[in-house]
Image (cartoon, rainbow, N blue to C red; front, top):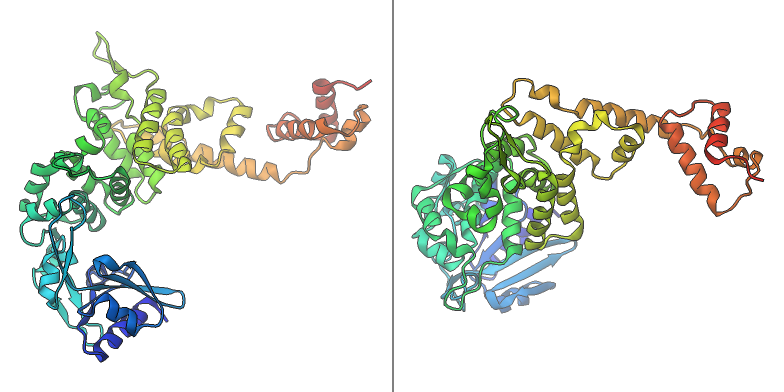
Length: 451
């Protein structure tokens, strides 16, 4: 049974017992857009206790807010009782919920019109009280009712709006845009006993923006409304005077203009890669040096930026692995432009990194994300792809220096054998020798003859 089939069966079971039940929110939106929903949610007039009594296996994951999970095999369906939320004194959750039987009342508490629609999967009827279908067709993110009130209820909605705009390539209704701008500082404010929105939740929304089909849509909205100043002020500095770049290497404009181009070139990448692209030049404002001839330099901006990226990823409470990945992308991005100048040993070590594909992608995006006429020629993607292929072929080669080779030189098998053989194989892959005789000569010169 698919998830939609289970959701339809849940609706049918609730109808059979006299309850209102419909598909709700995102699954309705995505199906109207012709997209496969991530999951299916059911809204019903049945109370949580009633839902638990109807279905044999449930999980009371959010029963205090009217939410029960119905489980069937490997599938789970979230079933929420229709409700009208009470006051949101903490800017995140309602102090209490009031159960209702009206679909319209439930829709009125939701964030955006495109998320406030319902569907009866048994008949196909759509219940749309606030113009969600119109806004889907027009490509608009619009608040349900008063946008200021929706933001006051849950300040994270200020980031959800740009995320949905990024996901679908939509614009934001002017009234909602004005409310985002007016309330941007509230995303990190602690006032009247209200906590700031947690950085974990902020990071989740930022991930949704950066990994969407249209990340620049969301980033531009964050910059335009002032929200970026609250969550990533280090990036906003790239769009100021200290973010201006060398006009020869970067005729396209300041660091923010360049960063936008890099992010655009990385669309479809993982969150660590996309965040690495967003932050790759974040150290430039702190390292900017202006010269009498009009040139600008940013010496060591990669190292400075890596330190800043570490602070940012910790602020977002990212996992150690993801944090390290982002930091390394920022730290390594300048070295990647000169990989064709590296000695063989260092190049081989670089190609063996587990993040080499992300490093290659960022280097290509960085090189081509400029206004230089020869920017394509600055990409090292083809060079590195070829070297990776050569390395893969070399890794299949039979070792030319073996244990017998070392024994013939008088060495006895022991703990040092493995490191000696590894060093010999690395040298072989680097082209130091290509025959068994050459290997013996190399080993004799490198290790000598045991006595």
